[in-house]
Amino acid sequence: MITLEHVSKTFTSHGQTVTAVDDVSLEVGEGELHVLIGPSGSGKTTTMRMINCLETPTGGRITVDGRDVQTMNVVDLRRGIGYVIQQGGLFPHFTVADNVAVVPRLLGWPRQKRRQRAEELLALVGLPPELFADRYPRQLSGGQQQRVGVARALAADPPIVLMDEPFGAVDPITRKQLQRELRRIQAEVRKTIVFVTHDIAEAFLLGDRIVLMAEGRIVQNATPADLLRNPADPFVTSFIGEDRGLRSLRFTSLAELAGPAPPGARPNGMILPGTLSILDAGRELAAHRDAAGDGIWVGDTTGQPIGYLTFQQFATVLGESLGDDAETPHDETAHAIHH
Ligand SMILES: Nc1ncnc2c1ncn2[C@@H]1O[C@H](COP(=O)(O)OP(=O)(O)OP(=O)(O)O)[C@@H](O)[C@H]1O
Ligand SMILES: [Mg+2]
Image (cartoon, rainbow, N blue to C red):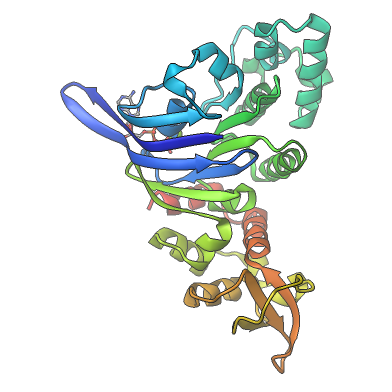
């Protein structure tokens, strides 16, 4: 659905050249959610902006649905792409409902239908329309404004959605709700989504693939499960292995999560005791990167298999638990990733 082939972007200002994006190649399949994660300044926003032609690449090629974006009519292109920008970006003189309905209005939807759609989406992102629809953006908190931004991006039901830290200014509990909501929407309607975050838990929770960026380049592009098994970058390893007060991970055992083995799952020499905590299992996994297969066998005290857990399930649970830990402030996570 979206491809980047050797895409680069350099900015020149005051005689200085900054390489914001450096030879990035990426392929986002239809209905997939790819997370871009990396330190501040690593080129995530610039990459997003090139996809919907807000920036022009200085090298390489970007296609959407098989067509080179450079040759497309910008209005047509953006009609098919919802964009949640990093800093809200609402129109201050429009009500919340009118902000949500900006694209439907451009598309000429009748007033009644626009209003109905705006109310539906506000409810979806947890802003009861009877309270919020007729307010102005300045009468909303930062997190509420961000949610309006998410509703706006979904309003015209575009096949592609670009989301630049959409939940960055939202408190941990609401954030969690929104993540769940996004996952539910995604399971239902399968948008093609590029999602930027600083939060590795969010990345594990939402991503079909996680693309780690640093200094304009892709350091690793992998499924959450492969990232866990085979982390290319030290910050992933340290994040998984270190103690950050992840109590819920320490108190959830593998046995609680294991299910029946799927047909065709084979013994792969990796069997972990069911009493092991998720946190310790994460360490074990990091130490056994070459373990074959798609998951972990879970055993009883005598080593007899009692269940099975796919790496994908493991990654999702890890993401959930990390997100659950209200004691881990978001800033701390951000700090860890910013090195
Ligand atoms: N218009 C511009 N002119 C000059 N330099 C720019 C411009 N836009 C971005 N840059 C530079 O390009 C680099 C990448 O910026 P970008 O906004 O893509 O980073 P990011 O990964 O989104 O960071 P953050 O996590 O802080 O949002 C930075 O060094 C930034 O200063
Ligand atoms: Mg950014």
